[in-house]
Image (cartoon, rainbow, N blue to C red; front, side, top):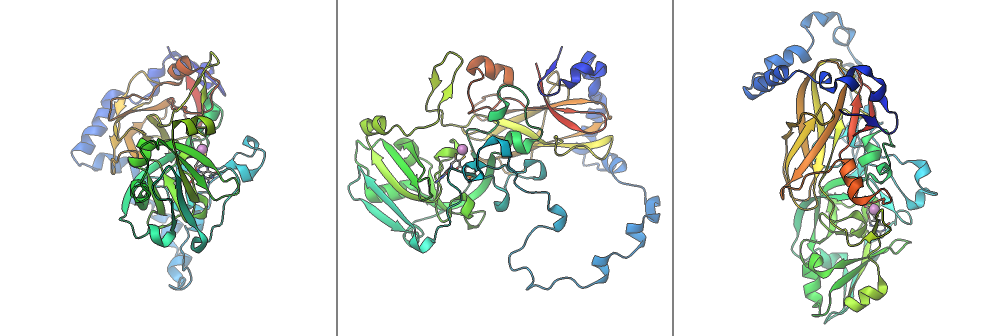
Length: 444
Ligand code: MTE
Ligand code: CO
């Protein structure tokens, strides 16, 4: 028997589906029918429901000539750098003003509920700055490698662009993503509960090439990376990771990094927590074990219920969220065909499978992953259902290539308590009401 806790305890008041959550789902036979229709490529079953009959021809948007059909539009010199349609002006990063004392050391969130596919547009990638956005002149930017190396080196941006390049799609997730949800459902929208994540294609150079050029000494076990912003943010990274898949990147989605994302150069630490991805990267210092103990720049730890803390929790755990429908993306079209869509990711590799439930976890259906399945990148999934207009308790559960299953929030709290801010990868629940509105709730 499911019960709902958290922000609004909605379902416990709703006799219907609290007593019988299974009643909230389309019957299996209907779902199978829809699935069979899709598999056979017969769009008819779907389009018959989704499209309007041609009798709607009295509709003035059809019978009357619209401005865009009557007047000439802007010429090709009017928009040298294109922007989205004005009708998309609500698709923006947003912050939560009460979260931090000042926007200069703060965070905003990716509007996940408005996006599709796996790539985040550059202007919508969430931002996290400790001392605001550094506006760096690339001609004056240098990257220094020093410490336990044979040959300390300084690179200009031009020097870096002469090393062999590669293109890789990776997600970046702040360790604090979903951090406000540890003690219960808090924020009403996946932009705020899960929006400290983005995924772009980076162009850059393997960090290993630069380190090999400088020659890391055998006792060089740690790397301290430092940014050129006013916080001169530093973070230490174990040498094995630095020599594995880390990159220094200068492009995102084909164009120069945005200032918000570390222009002209940022560190890319695939699958590991966002804090390590130092922006405006200007210095790398190689140190030994004793140096690392002394400097202690590993920063984030996860406080457990017994007062002990987990350290070195760098890898981002397997996680997923349904982005639509969700509180900011309610169902506005009524019953019938409904596209349930979401994102899944794992810092350990690819996503093997995503399951979706519409009844709070009683029955699960394997969702369809569509688009590229790349290691340490976002994956897009869909479940196409025929919604009968009744209440739903929507959840998604990701399983990565190593078979690691995303935990429920209860399982996570049992293992880790509620003191932590970081590494909350628990299963998210959305409560869909009959009128299509959606709320952040918890089921247990
Ligand atoms: N690098 C510098 N130099 N200064 C910063 O404040 N913030 C870190 C990391 N790198 C930060 C930084 C944190 S906590 C995160 S989550 C990521 O950058 C955020 O990257 P983004 O702003 O591109 O989303
Ligand atoms: Co962060």
